[in-house]
Image (cartoon, rainbow, N blue to C red):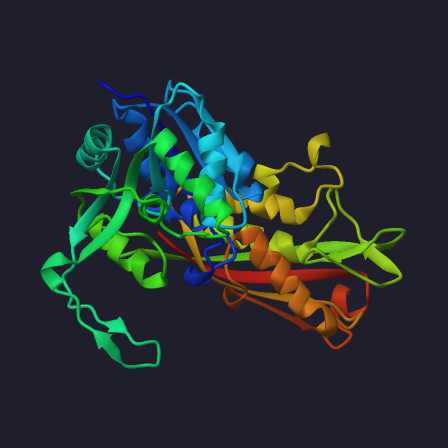
Length: 387
């Protein structure tokens, strides 16, 4: 081979168009995270000698664990920048100087093939710059900027550009410096080369090489994997804790002002515990007592939202995604209505889903039973998992 390539996998987006709060590259797709599909293909590419994954700072440790042991080639995981151009450059800077060529790929494109990576690398060595692309299926219109058609480019010359894209490293760095000096930021790496006066070769792409950008793309991805039909599982969880003096009252990760708190080995967040049990029950994975024993010093005073995050990580490993959660806190006092939204937001973040998928309610038992007399609090939850 005539060139030593370093692969940069860009996975630093915020997934806003996907409608979630977590990273779309960590979502389960057919039993494994989206990111691993492209990582494993590029790690096996004979042109590639080292890899760098660029991600959000909050995902860095998880992604490091995810890719650990997946290849014998050197792998680094670095935080991204404000713009895509900044993130790619962070990945390029993390590669060793011996990498004279760059292979850049979107982590949210799980269907890159070995043939595609090989073709792009060959063309980059031959021409200096190359990108995977497919002919446009649609007639495209150029807007006049005022809501009307300005012109219609010939469809036989229109190409839909994908990744991977590959470049001679010095060419790419020259183009970046030129863009920076002009104050320009580009969303496509080929644009950098074009703006610097370079030419980019089209390499064969694939119509299935979609980027997961909107919720509709999830359906297409599952269809490509033969996972179009999903099974659904329902879980139920219930937990109860005694109220005592000298403890903070934590519900759904929110510290609620009250003269008493819940007694427990962890922070005794009865709401997070009920939800955790519902999720584990739906997947037939036991309960939080099994996963986090109350006689283990490691969990003394533990943040129950962190435990919930671990439960959800386990579910993703098993191929489950959360459809919805509906939970109820049962307590005579205090009034919880002012804190409900914050609870939902905390729980949704811990579960890696949008807030609209998490419902939290509060009710009293009209002075009856141990909750009605203020001896303790309880919570129940039901959930829907998809696999």
